[in-house]
Length: 398
Image (tube, rainbow, N blue to C red; front, top):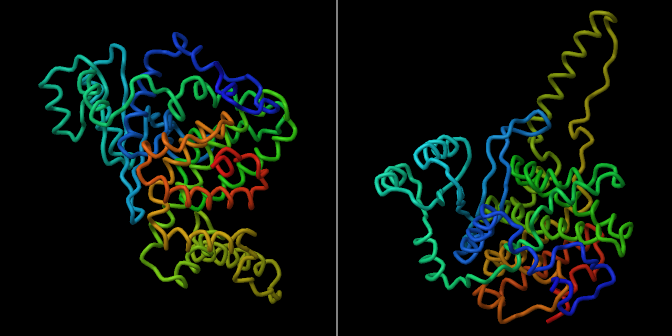
């Protein structure tokens, strides 16, 4: 039975996604292990992603450093975070070589905890890994942890449902012929570009991507591509929320006036601070003056606009309000990433009614987090022009 058959409105939910029971036997052993680890990390309290590509920088010329099989982010009540990476190997990888490789990668990326998932690793190799700050997880320990965290071995739902998640980035990119590169850019952004940016650049690019994909929904109304676009938006919303919470971490111990100054400065400048940008422009202007004066002595130069003509995005005041609301109500937001991710992938994507009992078990702080979830979704609806009924299962099926 497809996820769209479970009491869903089929007008826009064409059966492009594999049937839930149909993925079994078609998903590789390695992918299934990654979904299993993703499910465990979620139960441990992490917002999780699979297949995160880490590059040496931005742009087409950046080199791929590695892809993180499973990446998890744990948000504390004061908005600080902890990051975990699981390197999953179901085949014949040599444990010592892999652990040495992981040690090298760790020095280039910000990771707090690393788990190497591989069965058949000898005890002395595990001890070597432990001394290097790497935990080794084999089948027996994995099963024990699943029992400890009350993970149902038959639970393949939400973000770790292979039937709704497998190969989706490739399917998104395949739409690109009729979208002027929007879908290809969004696919690359979700997989890799997002993770090499600063928080404000992440924030603004998430908003742009959600808005562009939202504009395409009407074009593909009633077609299978509609559901692929919907999947992408459901991926981007938690990513927007993650950038927002990371910004809250930087602002949490500041007063509202200081928060406003820093927000506006960064919304205008993104990756290059305004003062540095001004220095660059002034230096360039002086060089140009010198060159021109050599040719035309005594020429008059107009004064340089110190603001550089830069303005914050139109939503800057609404973003102020969002940041103030979040930082004044941390209990409503520290676990909102997991709630957003699960409810969007399980209920919004499949257009099914919310199961509050299930959510209450998965998210102990569910009642508070739901207030935060609604606030974030209404912000997205407002500034990205997403139709109100897009998030109907979450906002109205209560």
